[in-house]
Image (cartoon, rainbow over all chains, first blue to last red; front, side, top):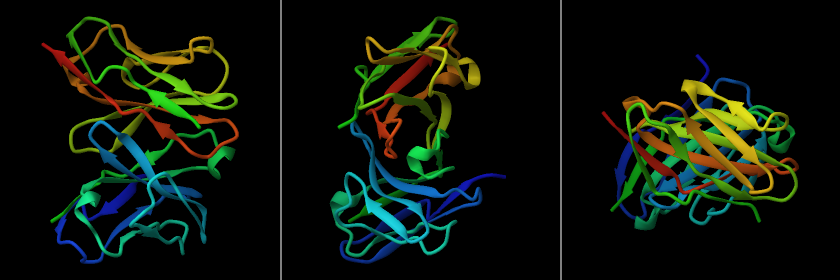
Length: 116
Length: 113
């Protein structure tokens, strides 16, 4: 089954404790992206990757890091989480390299993060 | 800069009545437009898209949307709503020469029995 898998789905942590949210897709998509969803703000892009070893900042990259060492994986790293990073996070992938494709995004089920 | 506006936070309709969720956009160049739906505790699911061609596009679950270039709108419609259509709906846009997809704030649809 074609899917985007995120882990963990739920996480409660404390300020400053490093954490990683993993994302994996099995559709051989070049483009992957991370979004955060907050009430009234919709989805805002954190980071994206056009292909392996190519990453770039989205609209709200502060406090986050990413890496793309393999095509299928795109982990989101919070080096020192703060309460304002409490949010619902979504990983997504898309066939084709960004604007070169007309396809839609495929989303993971989401990871709800609470930072105390 | 591109942007999407969904002017209604909530839409409430009775089952069997028509459903409309509004979306207007701003983008450089030709728009690629999308609608996604999010059910509780789930990720976003693709409903339909407009890339080019016929202004009326049909998608999943009986939904359709009409692209109106002069009004820069892409309203989502369903002729007869179901209780199971109750969800959060997002409109999204990107330019034909751009990689980035911008989302609206979302509209919560409630269909009462």
